[in-house]
Image (tube, rainbow, N blue to C red; front, side, top):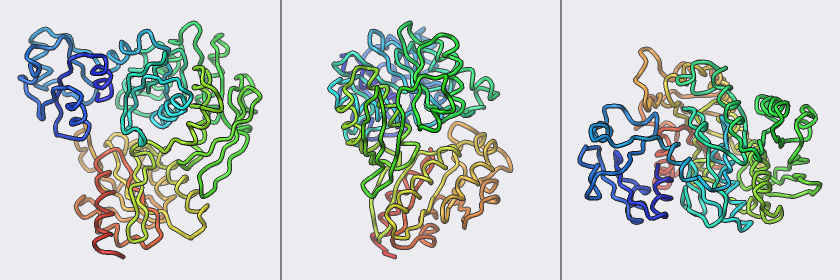
Length: 458
């Protein structure tokens, strides 16, 4: 929501709003001219001195009894979803949309960094904050608009992409879709929304994204694949747009050689993990299709230093390095822990990977309990917190023990959030790499861990 607010302000719109607490994004928007209240109240509709012409909400986060929403409906003010507004903001631009179950924020951010380095100055709206610029949105001077296409509530079907990237497809958000088939179908429908001259870009290393590409080739759509040489060989029906020829993990990062248009480009990614190499190849191909120079795009990718909460380095204390990550699905947890393992193995100093994980949503935890157990067991040791329910009510008898009871690495189930840092201290030793992980408030622990280790060294 803060991203679309930024773009509206840059376009001289009057923006008002509210949030449950004050925050850095709220203060930044106020400095740009937005009127933002803390707490929800019907009176907030008139923060600018008059009623708004439209009220914008995110789909899942706003309950129907919210007083501002109720007041808007009573006044007959149109209420639209964020995706509807974003679609309007993108009108007249060349739309570069990144979709997929995992990797949307990272791939979108990489595409933006690459295109900025190529001088394209795209407008963008990202679900995370770029580390270098410190922002999640921008009203650019170029003709491209880069954004995430969120599938969680089918809002991606509100867009008409010129370039649509699908990173992967794995059933999720079944509380909304009901079935895996319905979840897969939304990506099929998204591909069908391509403009007449549009391109679908699919990751060939993901079996479901590749299958989508194959079906769209049969439909006569313009499709390009990206991925490793082995994956490309398995899907010859999909024209190859970007081939990852080789990757090598070094202390400086992951060096990847990528071939596009018979040219071999070398990129050194600062964020570890094979999943990031794939994301980078997708971003590189999208930027190329948008008109960017390959050398400049590659330089921008090599300079990209990440997104807030995506393997974000938070600091070192008492010899312990602390990273924070948003991973909240077993596939994401696996990818991040494998990336952490690659990093410590490349350094060769015998460091261990310790994770402090907070499950997100009761429905997701129940659905993927065994998969979470297997993924978290990739760590050398773990602390698992209680489930962060977010928009869901607690489910009787369900705790994060349904994960920890099946884990094979040393693990502590810690239901007391306030005791989490003390518990972690019993698990770590100098040299270890610690990951705080999850989509809830576990991110608050990263700074607390560093403070405690500074004040009371190991």
